[in-house]
Image 1: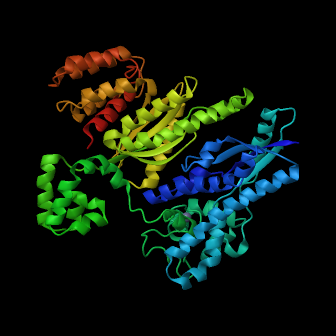
Image 2 (image 1 turned 120 degrees about the vertical axis):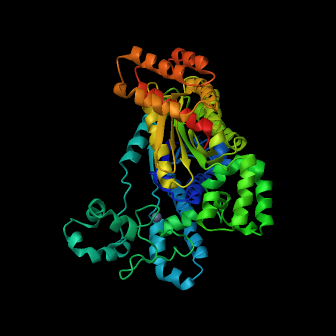
Length: 561
Ligand SMILES: [Zn+2]
């Protein structure tokens, strides 16, 4: 009997998951994709038991288990006649679309006003049905040549057009955009308009007409006469399309925000005392409604009870102020596409996917132990949030675990972005992804790109090789001394200005650096000067700008303000 290799994938997963304004957009999206993937793969379980189907990526234990650590790409083999195989894959896709369709019920549940739901039902269905694309391909495995079959399905899937023909009745914003007829007529078609109009009047396209989260689909409830109208904004602040609205509420009413992540460690330690103060002032609800009310500046802005504010100030003098920073870690294996292809060739693919799924399962524990929040881990991919205090340690443990499971041939790189809780999440996510791609550009990859973003948007960033994390820890310990100030780093920056960003005159840079350290009242200055001179892996005096940024990032993490 013939045997076929099948590849099935949900493309642009990053777009679906990472486009988020609130934490629950992110958690909802990251739960949705594996749930859909899994519901499809589960249709093949019987065939798998009868040995007609063999799962390659992900492995069968992942499909059977409850964990949602599945990637958005699956490879498996099916034995049978071509028509049968196609039938099975089609059935699988139908099940996945059914899973997607449960989002319509989520919207129905959330919009308590049935009339409103009915009015927009067509658009809701359309937006949800078209939000996710499922692409698949099969190729017969002839002469046991699975490598050739893999090439075939890879090419076919890559070529499969991801876009569907829009349904004229529901083309998003079409009616609304008629208001801007003059502009529209200048372009070839709707698609052309949307793409170019954004450059001309972004507020028109992004702010007024399209969903605040995805920026792609029209706001649910917007009409020609009132393009700002939204049936989601009453309980949402944001004006959303049906898909993003459903994604946000996909797993119940989780109220967690990035503030909860920033405070995780602090609140676990001091929560009792803080809750008691709110209780004593009859303000328990205030804290329950919104964790941000733990911050003095928020309470003051809202002109809350001055007595409560005074009591909290007293407490914070004793236990320290509540932290305002959290970190996003985005990590994945280096050159994984190439490694997976090689593994197919060397007939090692099952071994690799098994190791990957074992790695993936351990992440939850590491993240939890470091007071973080796991968004997803599937295969070599990890996205997790941590409070600032534990972010570096959490990342270190994850990357060590990756190497431990995968062996020396495998490395991983990551973006680690530390942000003030008030910076928009969508921006921080984007920065985290871009930090990850910068880490991949570091010579030899195997690195983490660390960046911090303050409330004022001022920032600094530095790449650290994974092997140098211990040294970075040592640096952090130096700069965490109270008498080592940020002021020193700014003075150094000024002093080295003529040599930035890079120079051949490393001798001078080193001398000036030592000179400045020598002038400081810093107690451990001799040790620190030696450390800088001897640690070429962190401090290359030919690259003074990198040195300054490394110091800034280390000091920032150490001070944890
Ligand atoms: Zn949307």
